[in-house]
Amino acid sequence: MSQPIVVSIPHHLGKEEATRRLKAGFEKMVTTIGAMVTVGRQDWVDDHLDFSLTAMGQTASGTVDVTDDQVKLEIHLPGMLGMLANKVKDMITQRGQILLEKK
Image (cartoon, rainbow, N blue to C red; front, top):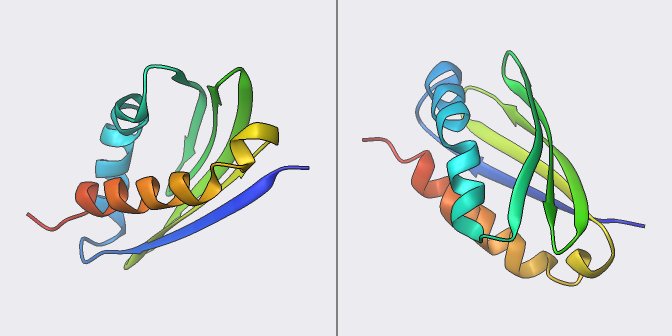
């Protein structure tokens, strides 16, 4: 059974700008996490993303939903990756906040 992580990141960008930044930065953000992480699937429909990624030989899947004032990410970490849930959550929160900073 997978260990779910849910992260909500508030923003002041509006839905369109936040979605644009996420589309542009999602894969780059994942690759900065580590060389052993690869994005398997990235399916955007409007302001909703279904994705999968592989790390340490295990596949994780998740969703991202963008609203006018927040981004909600949910990812399911299988097996050994589930043991890293707190570290992954902290990293996603930190990098997501940087990506969504108003500039």
